[in-house]
Image (tube, rainbow, N blue to C red):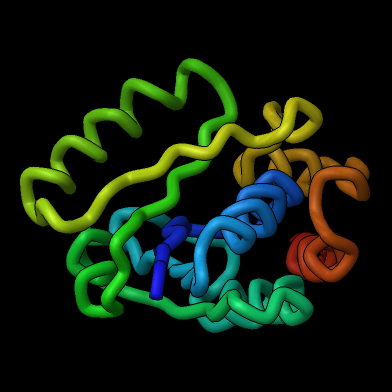
Length: 160
């Protein structure tokens, strides 16, 4: 069975993330979308909220499951018998950092490969940070995130 892990903070999940999820799900028998618990970041949404949104927006993709992890992605992949880590690329500027992480992961766990997927051009400018900033100033993100996520963002920023 070909198993892949697509890790990220997903704070919140965007249409760019969904593009990568949908395409990776076609390439692997099982895709685990994994929310990273990063103590160095101050997320807008809790891990449970992010898991809930991911489950909701991926519920129609049969071979996708959602989980969360602490620590190294490569260890999480190995623990879940995944042979591949999926990384999404939006632009050339993403590549250098992703390339270094892939090399580090390969050094730590030689049995796990990294596969880079380019997001479609219409999603190449979308980032979770930009989405949060737009919503914080009252802007519309209808074309950037799934409707559920847009609603959750509005709710988060309603009282701020």
